[in-house]
Amino acid sequence: MRRVRFRDTAGTVRGGRWTTVEGEAVVTAAAGPYGRIAFGDETFDPEEVDILPPCEPTKIVCVGRNYADHADEFDNEVPDRPLLFLKPPNTVASHDSTVTVPAGKERIDYEGELGVVIGEQCRHVDASEAEDVIAGYTPLCDLSNRDDQEVEQNWVRGKAFDNAAPLGPVIATPEHLDDDATIETRVNGETKQSATIDHMIFSIPELIEEITTYMTLEPGDVVATGTPEGVGPLDQGDTVEVEIEDVGTLRHSVNFPDRR
Image: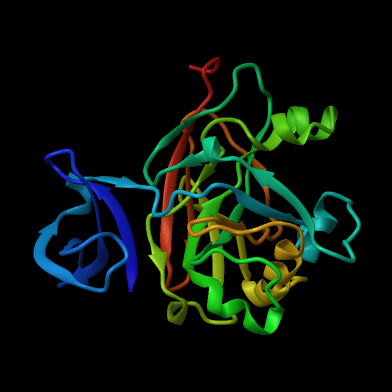
């Protein structure tokens, strides 16, 4: 199942599922509150409703250098334990949104990632039990302001600007994700990143165990599991797509306010 949050034509925020009928995408509204496995017959064209972020995280826990080839392309060492940082709730942006980046910045990079959505409050989760706390998976783009991150070594300015973490459009339940699923990032239709998630240095269960050693994860929180090689800069009006095989495709564009 691929779950979705959306605002219908009457302006009501609703939950539902994203399906395909006769080759066309359809959003079917839930008959009850978001999260219940019960759906009515009311359907919508995704192009005619506002697709919202599929979850409302209290935090996004990001993992740096979790693909060895990505560490190499920036001449960084491969970490011997997960390199963690946070993106706060203000960074969340929806599918098909336009992200206006901070003015005056020369380099904003795309980083396509697999997002793990947490389904229950958890702390001190053993890797062997990590699957029990996962609600599902979603595509995510970790937009990165290299001017401040690399030059000033300031990760708050570099990673936490408004709308710096587009995600969605769906949460695909765990059965959709294969161990060797492909993650692909495209800019204006050109493939920039392509890898399989089994190339992660630290697995999803290992990441959840490490993170919950230090903090409580809440329902709707997201673990961004790292990006493969092929990261690069964006320009005015670029369209980014992050596709996770059998999960979904996130699409967003970027606006540089001083490059119009």
